[in-house]
Length: 497
Ligand SMILES: *Cc1c(COP(=O)(O)O)cnc(C)c1O
Image (cartoon, rainbow, N blue to C red; front, top):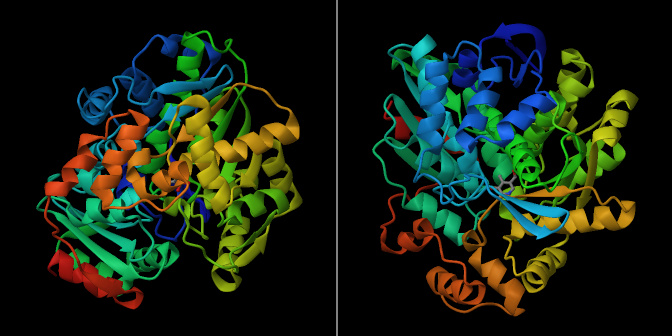
């Protein structure tokens, strides 16, 4: 199977090329030209398998050109024992008889980004071996907090790669900042940007297509790639866990084979929920994909009205990893929903760039309504949901997961739909201890991050992950702040070229 660009459907590249490029040269995103199928029999068979086996099966459907040995090496390297705090890798936890939490934060940085970013360096290395022999890859990342740390951790000291991360100076939690500032590894660089996440993302996208910089890289035997969810290699590992969750529910007798479930995803850049969409297109029985926004509700509005309008106030919220007004991966959905119409997709993206706004046609709108439902959650509701979930079920969600839970409850009240539902839990509550403590105590917590962790542990009786507690003893390596217009220079200087 080959990959086309959302802005040119005649492009046809291999999986290895899509993964090493990150972004297509025309500025579009790579998409599979065909979506592979998974039958109910396949699902039944996978129900008895481990996460690693499930991942191998799903990945092999998408990664043409990778040998079975390549796939074994990648998947086993990423999810082997000890890398994740759960042998299930992505465990499913029961809230009620028909509501389940899919815990995606058991990896080394305590956010769902690890699910993909532990695997991506392996996919990248294998892909580079197939087509970039001898060249070094420079990975550029714009992060709203969690991708940056997960990418740094995934790529640190990986041979043949360098990684540079930009995060919005005021747009990440203290814990997230500390995780990145203390990053170890000889091939890593981190800088804060004066601006918000969209500024950082736009800056990175501009650098990727800057002719002068690309020439400079070429002279130094380097190529750029991306570890953001614009890279197909970030999305494909995420398809696995939705299929895996279905398998777990089936295996534990919570659903019957073929029974449709709802999937709720707290959404920012539209990557995680898009992976759920691909799982559904492959044949996973899904009733609705429920897109949950925080106060930056550009996506919830879009799904409801068909108008995408980023001309609005930007808010820094208690769920900072979803503070985004330009959701890059939506471009892939528009491409599929418009019937693989690359000119239409490109024209909407141009309107977004020039006017900050576009309106989709009737066909795309009706497909959106058929497959998706959406809602949003205010700041007060987010905190109230953290407290309510903890008090009612004894389960402590993080602020992002709480957005998902809240939007799901609203959906259920409105529709009366009681289908079995899986809510993606995207981060550990210990990653946002200030907001989570405030939610359950009803007042601003005292003390530093580490005192808050201890207090939260005391209340919840769930152990603080060692990877967060251990930050206390690490020294800060990166404290550079750059203007959004100076990101290119920062990249060249960090690459030493
Ligand atoms: C990245 C992130 C999200 C948003 O995921 P997208 O794929 O960008 O939609 C939600 N929650 C957390 C904790 C995240 O790190």
